[in-house]
Image 1 (cartoon, rainbow, N blue to C red):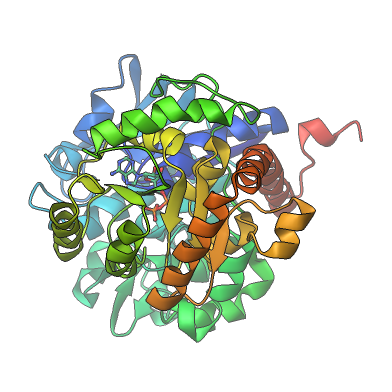
Image 2: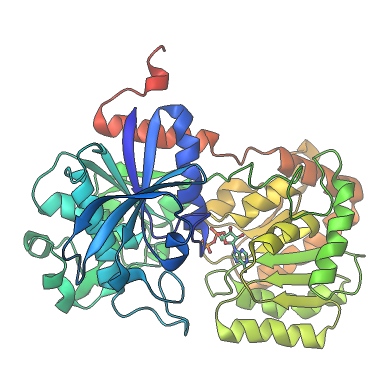
Length: 487
Ligand code: ADP
């Protein structure tokens, strides 16, 4: 067995704000059959603590960044968890990163330095009966893990830093450095300094033994000025250890054949049964019918996701006989833009601004088109759910979207390999054109059904990707995987 500790600030089904949680929750299960035992370390936010029915304290800290703390071991829904119970850091209302008012907690640097520090301590033998061989750090919240390993007391544990989104870098003022419990050599050697301040993500990218990101195209893009967000130079210099591994999805959690959120279940050969689900979506979003294509969004409403471009295309979309259901929240100006469109086009445009896991499944199971016009997209999960549910993805050709959707150009339609509509560049004009193309394809019923079927048959499971992670782990520690040993 290869022992890996995954360190993540959110893990589905305990706490989720985005794709990171889905990945952190799915990976351990996908890796188990491949000879990898993965435990997951996460902060004990109130929502997490409330789900730990059977827990054991396995370590304690007299002073973990300003207060006493305990490390709890628990199993929840098949996940083997280590949870940091540190009330002074995590016991508060709001989300994982921000208070109820939406503002980031001012002590986030401490909250996530603590997460990373505990991981480091586990990596160097804090627990008598558990010593991981690899610490796998996710995003900036765990970015200090590789730095503690590289600069504090030496330990033989290996580290991997995964980037789920380079836009979130964990940047703080230089004045917090002395409080991080990180050896001063990290400062001397420029491992954590970024434009005069500190970046947790940069520290991870600089110090980890291996780097991964969540699609091959994004792994290329982030080495360029256009997508590198200031870190392209560092990423170029580490290109030999940077791997792009496309995310999968949990195909049991997301299965149109038995999804409890859907009134009607269906398969690739019975997509006509989606009609009842479409009606249910129309009902939930206050739409007045189900004729014509139903476009949908399940997303954070942000500039990254290209939602401003979509808002500008709504009038045209409605004038052509389409409807739009938006499930998402985010930037107030964008929320207001969609709300205004719903008022302008009653019965044709609906928006629900809450976070609702059930509704997100229903939308995938009933809408015709999942619109994802991102300006950049590390991997994206909603197009994968769309493929699995026959909700045809309409995506910009960036990052993981480019890697997972095959455009319905005439050649691809002819060859029967198309799975969606892909456009470039990520501009409003190109999106408008792609929407018009979607109407034309939707009008060709046979072509449309074939595209749905093809999408539903694409492999979006974790299997292939989990193999790649397992190979990376085994190469890193020079140990064969158990399941390889008979080869
Ligand atoms: P990101 O992580 O950048 O937000 P992803 O596409 O990788 O984007 O993952 C987004 C995840 O969050 C998906 O699982 C999607 O279904 C979910 N999601 C986004 N907004 C909502 C919402 N309002 N309600 C329910 N689920 C949502």
